[in-house]
Length: 219
Image (cartoon, rainbow, N blue to C red):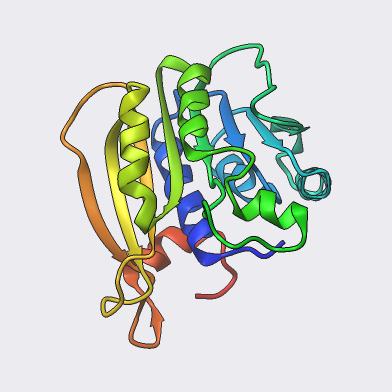
């Protein structure tokens, strides 16, 4: 599976937040894919992480990736359906890079559809499950297409989850946002909203360099 820059930015953003708030332990990664987000969090935090993935090939790759890392003893890869998952304890933080598309033209490969389309797990169901599995003071963070963040806020509010921080990502200052990083908590507050450009001119922006240093070999 390909690793996208926006997913790396999301992982780095969440990892930095959890590093500054070490009380968040354990963590649940819903739809872990290759295990990228869990590995980035483990690099910055001592938290134990459960990473669940429904697609068998992706789960196998995530297991291979985590076992080859220095943090294998803190990351548990679970192959299964989050809607059938029965955690032994609530989670203090939940992260997810959910399927981006809904009611869109699908690929011929069913495994790609599970990864990219919310036919199996809708965004509405994801927020319901997140609320169900969170501890009373837990938080959650999601990587979303920009055009879905407003609907995501509606689903979040239905489950007593409220935007704490929101970052709209664009490729450059001249482009419109295409992704939103959303952090949710269980208390109402004024949402911190920022715009973030990945690149300026021919290079990465200062903000992107600050987040990705430590994960990228060259920037």
